[in-house]
Image (cartoon, rainbow, N blue to C red; front, side, top):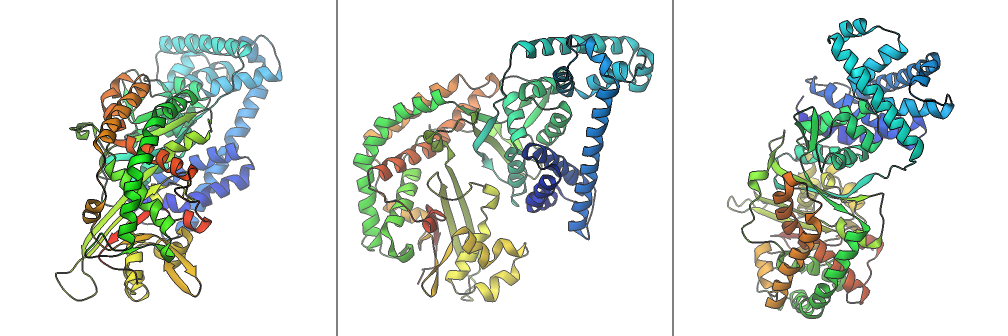
Amino acid sequence: MLKEKAVEIIISYKEDIFGFAMSKTKNVDKAEELAQRIVIDVYFSLLKKEHVENIDGYIYRICRNVYARYVNEAVKEQKMYQDYSSQVSSFVPNDTDEAFHLLRKEISYLSKLQREVIIMYYFQKMSVSEIAGKLHLSASAVKWHLFNTRNRLKERIKMQEHVKTENKPFRFIRNGFWGIHDVNNADDQALKLCLSRLVSQNILCAAYQEAKTITEIAETICTPASFVEDEVMMLEEHGLIEKMPGNKYRTNMVIFMHTKEITEQFDQIFKEFVAEVCETYIPMILEAVNKVARNEAITSGHIYTPENDINFLNWAITSFACSVKLKFDKKGIDLSKNYVKRVGGGENIAYAFAVGGFYEEKTSDVDRSTEMRHQIGSKDSDDNNANSTMIIDAWQFNTCHDNRDFDVADDLYTDYMYLYDFISSTTDKDFINNVEQISDWHSKERMFRKGYLVNSGKDEIVNIVVISMQREEFVNLLPEVPENIKIKCHELTAQINKIYEKHYPKHIQEVASGLHFLLQSRTGVLRILKQLLETGILKPLSEIQKNSVNTIMFTDKEVK
């Protein structure tokens, strides 16, 4: 089975898998670990299959088998520590339950080979020569592993006795890819799956500044090495981590680390810039929006906003105008030489914004913005004119002000194709029957669930802004940014880059710096929206509007 098909199946079953794990463990942390083991098993199992007749039953059997192994491991581990508890004194001076727990935790951080050597020698009472024969090592290599691992355990346990630290994991609040995406979107879905797991996020953060072994990563993130090994294998396959000399691994993506200190610095340097934009440029945009809404600024085309709500239109056009007109990037940036080739055919740079210790402040929402765009063209329309085409250019800006979950894998170009056919009154007749995809992803129910369609009285209406002209034509209608603000854009980005600079690893400094310039406009736009909302220029949105705000579809059809 192709990798992209396996990923598609996993994504469709991820909630069911987690539900199974939760029902068995009754613990969120354990359920997450079990679910991730199941996902890995399902993925590699599907790759070996050409076709699966009963996919529900197939995945359920894998769930049961993985859970059975999970239980057996726990039972064996418990028995091992009970049967050979006398050996604990070799490492821990105090023979207590806490000591047992500490030893077990520290052994779990060891690499697979180190664990096997320690368990065989101390717990299974095997001789050095017997271990050497079983593991295909020399006797001297076994002795070295015993000496090195024993000292490491003593050092770690002694440190733990004196220093009680609470593991505060990193969490990605936004991630994405810059560059060329594969045609079928399989890479995006696979990469999103990898980056969505907390353990993967922390492995990537642990190996970001410097390359580390599996054991070093396990100790850093307080996760058993056996589980880290499985995750690293998946991350390596998708190009998010690379193997280095000495059995070390180094993160192969850009991570922008955020702390409270960084966010406060951002607040300070953005303050003056946002105030000036809101005072001088935003009134120009709103004047243009009003002219467009009254059709005074266009000779052809039409602007549709649900129920003629100008505030809803102001949100979308202000976000769009600032995104395309406020240019923060440096001229001449070319990141293509740094693109990573993905298994599905895409070539791009993966990036993420991370916060440590679950740092949650209102200002951290600024970094949650994502911008997505779908371009669809050259499809015959319904007027039987061979030269006519359906043109859709869909744009969406996700922020902390909407109800969306920022999942790129759930943002499908076919959603906008459905809306196009809905506007054209052809949905039920043509579109659904011809789409070779899972029907739920293109159903009217999905459109209502996403908030792209809503009920208004007796009618079903489109709940996004629809502009019946080409994107480029509309951009030309928007006011140009005053020169003094253009200069401030570049100055501000340079200041922010200096803040980030010390957090970039040496091997990724150039690409991280360039990528940051290209991404910076999103942060600026969201701070502008926040200021406009606080000053009352933009009004609060209803719950229905929050589902689809800042979504624009440029097309050749008018909404009647």
